[in-house]
Length: 69
Image (cartoon, rainbow, N blue to C red; front, side, top):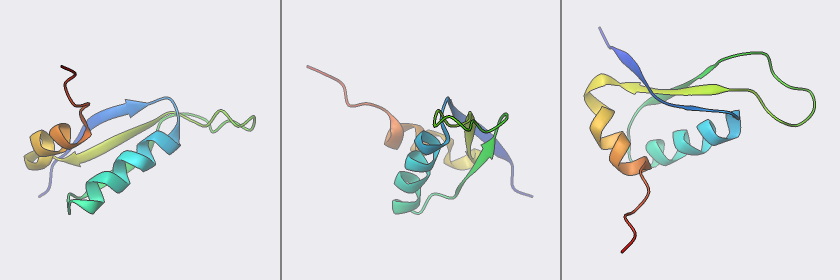
């Protein structure tokens, strides 16, 4: 049985889709869960990005911002 955990939540679905594509490019399975009612005014709807529990730390590293010097 695969356990999925919420890695990140976003205010707009397109952000979750972008993160989903980054993870897919590194062969990390993920899924997007809509959280709320879609907006009809172009603002989008909140969404959650989920990954398998054993991919959590790799996914977090891939989606984190590089440290500024």
